[in-house]
Image 1: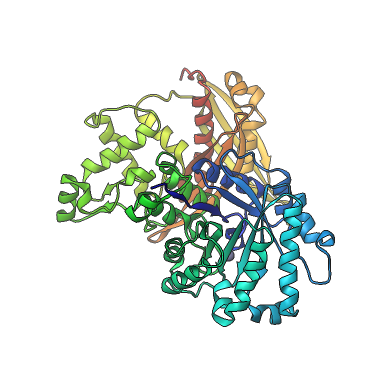
Image 2: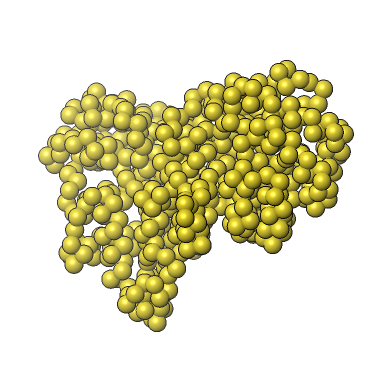
Length: 536
Ligand SMILES: [Zn+2]
């Protein structure tokens, strides 16, 4: 039996970006798009060009994707305008994507209240919009807003709306549970009925999570015939979020019912990046990864308690529904050093460090990591700092620049303005020689960075290695451990290779935390560039 394809459509950059507290930069969007592309997602919705300047410029600087098709989003033409003269539709064409996804009303109540036009006029808008994009040779998708509520209220009208899109060339008709109140059995029933009018191979599902059923609803829609699933990384989205692709993808790939019938573009090799992809989004949002997230959470395969642990050690299948390594996650056994060691060994393997699990250095690394984690370090998403920590313990990182001392002061020169200046004085030690450096910045980290950066030409042998080092992002998270607040600073750096790396520093003092993250970034850059050691 030939397997049918389920198309995956990610809307993290559009629907996800509408979440409270989420404010992606263009660089964030590009980073997420590249990760989704590497994972093998079929469609990536990049945003709504014309609706805000950020999205318009994102499409101007489109990342080049080899797996995914970039999609721009908009709405059906306005009543009283021709499609050719509708600025919204023009922005979509200007965004220069192969595919467009256009939202339109299918619930008569919304046509009446929100658009204040007649049902017939709304149908014309849908039809003319579809024709316009087909004429302009775009792959056209119709996003049927509030479809399930519309279907329940006025079935014939809801169906005639999507029929208008389909009959006029829509490749996909995406059924949206916009308010997220529909339950799985209703999805099965309604999608089943719709697929009698429009083939399932042209139907998609876009579910919101307001009853915690967005994943179940997406899978139910597939069972009932739909062949495209829309969702977001980690279920990011307004209110209670969107369908979580991170949970859906492994179920499609590994669970018998779906595995036997369907194929997806995320293959068994690419899916090993899933956990990293999920954590990348958390890092960008500066939030702690959800430990209990299905498949990718750090607790998803954590075992504690005697009976479970001993059974898992005999055969992991006793308490695990799949092998965590398939999705790039790992088993962790909370009380056992043995498994802590194997976690370390598997992380080291990812860094191409081969080491025998029985080597006493593994225990040393484990103790150090545990110790650091206790004081607030978490190495999730900070791979460069983890690599440095382990390579230092393995004696693979030489001494580069030593910090003899530093001093940072914050000066408010004039009470009337809000201008704060920070001045940093750092004494560096290289080959036993002292190098005093001074820098000024709008904040302490900036000043520390400037102190080192401004003096690059004076710090002898390391200047060339560091000349292309850039700090891209700086994030602060306050960790509350008991009565003391501890600060975790994460710095993202890059260089001319355009690969970025994340380093962290943790301390009760924000400046010290920042400085540690900064020094790790410099050491990582020097290590990566094979810089020579400092003699003392
Ligand atoms: Zn939505």
